Length: 321
Image 1 (cartoon, rainbow, N blue to C red):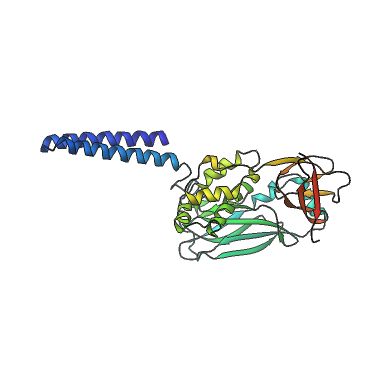
Image 2: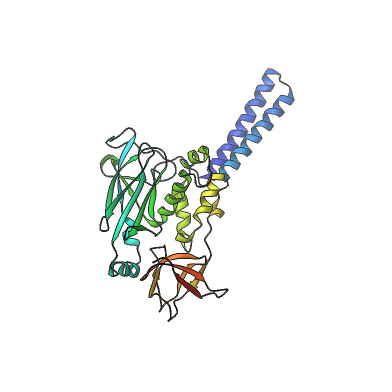
């Protein structure tokens, strides 16, 4: 697509240049004016071509691609849509992790968070067995929909989610059924957008407006290609979007280490924030973030620190439980 656009721009430049050349001959305009028009058009073409290179992640197309605008459905409110949000995340949770969570007597529920037509943050709890959720969402501006798995009412894990309407899909007769798949890769994008809308990076209104035309679907596809999609630096992505310096190189993974639990460990298992990862138990290694962080364990939430410079050594500190 970029090559076609570039060809059309250069062809347009050539056509305009020939027009002005013929126009100057016909009306006896000085050559310096022709030169001026040529330089002006040349600079314009270069600027546009540069813009194409720096806006790889921008789009104004249909709802499934970039910043597309979906038509209202049933019009429950002005310029709003009824959206069926599919709980794709539940099927993506690691089987061993889910088994431990369910067998440990924990109360598991879903916490859904979104923005209404008045740009107010809304939320609602759903039972763990919920497969979909019907929402009324503003049609037009890019807005995050976040789905958290709560453990005993606490928000800990990375959320699933999606960006509406950019990631929405139309289905059913006449495309009246609008669906949104809430999964963990899309959730990275939704969390980045939520942080930007909450002005966590001192961003301007222009940056928020730019988010409406950002290609969130393209970002999700790029994140999915990473070795550890959940461990990408979300704050770095958001900062670069707000500063207008975002590029594919902005998607960086945080440093990780392979860790194991020693036999004398005070806990029997650890679960990191990525629900798609297996738990860390004494019988296996697990790739976890190299930075100090909280983890869920059979003793509740514990704080995990690295042991000196050892690659795989961990010190586990049980805090406030």
